[in-house]
Length: 129
Image (cartoon, rainbow, N blue to C red; front, side):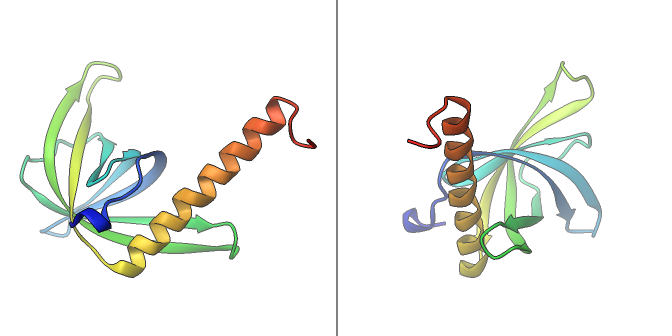
């Protein structure tokens, strides 16, 4: 992934699917997007260096529809967590991301940032100012 294809850094908590080369599908939860990858929580151990396809369905609030995205990733690291027990945090490096999927992902991140800012203003009483 080139520097211009880097992803914005943000929290991204959502159920996603990791598909192994043999077709096995593992349900995971994304935690955050980093510039060249993402962090996920899984119940199934992954193998460092393993290649996976990441599939997710993102809400597009502006267009009022759900949009699928797919990323090809490689497992960079795997850490076994003590709380919750029997869970793992994995770092995935994006190795391939189609431009249309990148656009969908960046649009989703921007929409979520605007929604969070709006919710923050409402909580602090700044919504009508």
